[in-house]
Amino acid sequence: MKEILKKFIIDNYLLGSGDIKDDDSFLDNGIIDSIGVIELTNFIQDKFKIKITVPEIIPENLDTLNNLERYITRKLKSSK
Amino acid sequence: MNICKKCVVPENFPHVTFDKDGVCSYCQNYLSKRKAAGERKLFRRRFESLAKKVRGGGEYDILMCYSGGKDSTYALHLLKDIYGLKILAFTFDNGFVPDRTYINIRNVVEKLDVDHIFFKPRFNGILKKVFRTSANRSLYPAKTLERASTICTSCIGLVKYLSLKTAIEKEIPMVGFGWSPGQAPATSSILKISPIMMMEMEKILKRPMENIAGKDIGAYFLEKRHYSKPDKFPYLIHPLGFSDYNEKNILKKIKEFGWEKPHEVDLNATNCLLNSFADEVHIAKYGLHPYILEIAAFVRAGIMTREEGLKHLPVKKNTRVVNMVRRKLGL
Image (cartoon, rainbow over all chains, first blue to last red; front, side, top):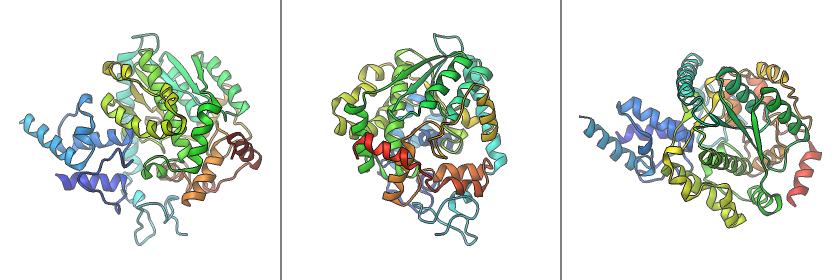
């Protein structure tokens, strides 16, 4: 899962040749802004077939690769 | 220097790669014009549904950030005439608004018959300090430099949070921006962001500005009382993201409202005298034009040809205007 997310971030925001560590903050590093956050949530919803609600769009869920992985795993478990 | 054979992205743009045919990674990742049109249609429907839900629910349906430039003028027209919304137009005066733009704003808001307010922060105490420092230093994360000059990021940041603050206080359910499709794609044309996420984004802009201009900068950003009203946080709307964008048609339409291009501005801005100076500073520091990504997206979407796009990228500055900016900023 993390590799899929990492590829999306690198392809869309770092254009293929940049790199990102698992705990790098997307916001602090200016990798994504408000527009990027929505693109990221659209991608996650389509790819993992989960519904992200507005209150869930918080840094604890979306701001790093590790946070994303934990959040999506939790959502997938709760949807079973 | 090599420039992408399909768009205008140069080889020195951060992280870009080229294939054997000289095509950049942005063009390789581009959906296709047909898919992009499908996305516009989808988000247009979503907006129609949202507009139907909020219409008539309060004093205003949308606060529109209205710079007086061609794009926000056209967006204002769409919101009023096509979607039938009750609008409060909001203009941020950064101290570099051309005289003709004031006339354009008056003509357009009167012709479209919308309420309008100006907000002009004090210049010497706030804006001069922020713009001067933005010209001399990088204030924000490096990635932001690919999208805009530091001066523009500072200015737009103030517009964004002031408009959000005003909308929350007036309980207006949507805030509109005139971003072109090159600045914001269809998929991000309707945004709803949680207050906690917004607070983190705000810090990135507010902290450097606070270091420059002091605690008074807080008046232009959200406060605890705003964040404590999550249900009042508006949708952020970019109407041009889900509209069919054609510059010639836009100029023809807004001419009907008495809009004329100010003669002192450059090719990439129709409402700001600071722009050429901001571009010049950015190019001198980073060797890149801050409009590359927007123009490249226009070329990819067929909004302009590659040749037209390339004409937009050298800074064709008006020396008199740039010198006026330098004097006003004390540089």
